[in-house]
Amino acid sequence: MKTITDHLAGYAAYHRDRRNIATHLVGIPMIVIAIQILLSRPLWEMGAWFITPALVVAILASVFYLALDRPLGILMAVLLALTVLLGNQVAALSTTVWLSWGIGLFVVGWVFQFIGHYFEGKKPAFVDDIMGLAVGPLFVVTEVVFMLGLKRDLHQAIEARFQQ
Image (cartoon, rainbow, N blue to C red; front, side, top):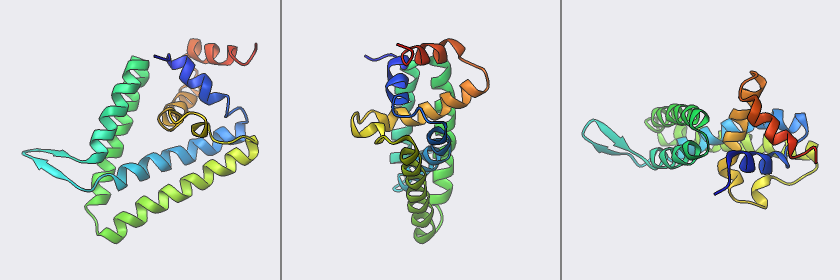
């Protein structure tokens, strides 16, 4: 299995331009929220618990992130839990409102992505490696973590791959 450094360095190879990273800081969260909104229907109630496709995706993604790095995995799990809750709130609204938010955020998020890749002059990472769709949200969160001066060893290990 690839390490977190492998995944993030592979993704970072497509995201070296600061403007591209900036557009991803906006676009990827919009896309993740949109997907969680759209996957929040149907809803199956099991006593006090609820199961949605959004919850299943969030759990699977969280397991993936936790396997790569425990602290970042916990952070990702918390953020995904928040998107599940938000998705459920929006899914409880009318179908028109639910679809408008879900599709609207998805489209606008991808517009941000493609603008960023225009600046970068490279195609999106997922074109060459479908795992880029799962690594993208982790990349955004780690970029913020790096901006806060945290996880310096991981940041240095990723950047060292581009010094060679």
